[in-house]
Figure (cartoon, rainbow, N blue to C red):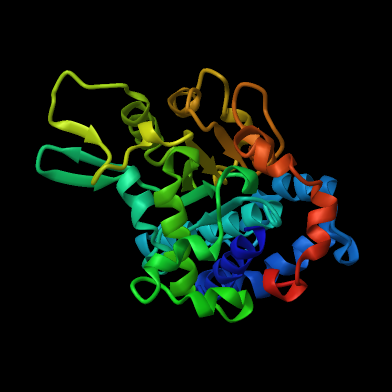
Length: 314
């Protein structure tokens, strides 16, 4: 199963490096700064966590500081992509995958699980990134034989038998069927990413309230669609990760409005510098906070030895 997930993760990395704003920043500055931390590509968990504490400075090294709409949008895409790269790097060799919910990586079962229905209006959270943790191998059958009944309908068994040659469409369809058949064992972490902490910090608070509710007095508000719901999965969390781009980080205090808005999120509040008690955790802490079982099944220092350096752009 891990091999299947890693094949899918390679597709995610490939997608990220095809995003212009991300690839340009990566080649112009980010790669060089990442390699300063991962000295001579000698990866360790300590360096991974150090990288999380430096993601803000790495991101800002290519920032123009322009707040025009086009620049804000491009910066937002770059920040989401940098986070997706970092989180997938830390989760290499695990049961957890982090993806941007684009059409290329659309799991219909996950989409239906986090859909919110307000009367006739259907909406999805501002899920800039979605982390999906699959069940342990010994708790679910991943056998291709078990899924042969779908042969010719949604994917090719022949493709899947040789993972290196599997198409993204086949991998996506196969994993979607695994999710559907084992929905009660799936963990989901929706992650909203913002470059500027002051911008719409109330949005993740609102969505987390909706998802955390066990019911509404108005019967026309429902979470889930077509038989799927966050109440049927193993675990659901909603997280917020910011750069932030504000210059004076000392201005962020325990009593600050933007801090209070995300203080009690089910999935936590993180930023790209060192942890500040009662304000925000460093991004690297998300691994043990939100993906503990998956992350700790195997030592990171052992998992990282199995990567293909080219896959992660180094």
